[in-house]
Image (tube, rainbow, N blue to C red; front, top):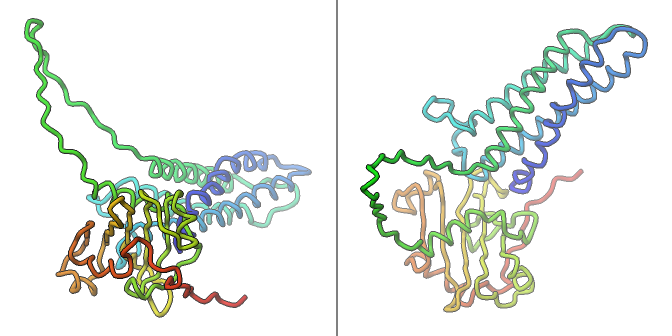
Length: 321
């Protein structure tokens, strides 16, 4: 599921390309007369490619929202309330509108026509509107993927020339090492994945996990050798449902190798309500290194990684055919 989610940005290029090319074919298909049928074929081909690409992008985008915890397990779509409106809601709204308009445009383009007739003005109008929505969806998705915080400078008071401004800077505390570990763990997709499919791990609550390792430690992890100092290992997980990976995102298990030994951490962004009784009613859990509830984990990880023979290899069965 997470492999498909990570392909959303890649697959979304197809409908955007259709949005850029379709207007050319539709304009060319407006000339009635002999030989116009070839432009029908081009426009219809682009229409089908755009609709299939948009459906695929919507499906992988939905999986990506689920995987990143942007969509609560009990909701089908993000909230459309004015207070919750933001770039993600705008991106999803434009994409869904493109799906509706795209279906109408494809219907207009595939209507029965005589050999000498053009595709008609309805095809042109709906196709141009659909192309605009596809490009808007791609642009808003690009903005989400490359969002950066914008800092607006506060207005400064104008002081007399004879008075030099005195800037008082409050002391800043150094960043917490645990905060740095959590930030790196949340960006686990930037690490190297060690197996393409999730495996069920009894030792980690019966959840389905994938292993992500920093590049310098990947070779040692694969052969069960001691991890080098500075190595980072993250297990992403999803909850089990009927013996297969379910839709609810599980916790992140983090291991960082330090000179003094392994440092274990645990983070669960959204604990399902049925499991909160095990976490004293909390909706979110963050156990940094040294937390009392992580002492039991050191029995399997006294020197870093657990014995390679104890790793789970239980993968979900694939459907035949």
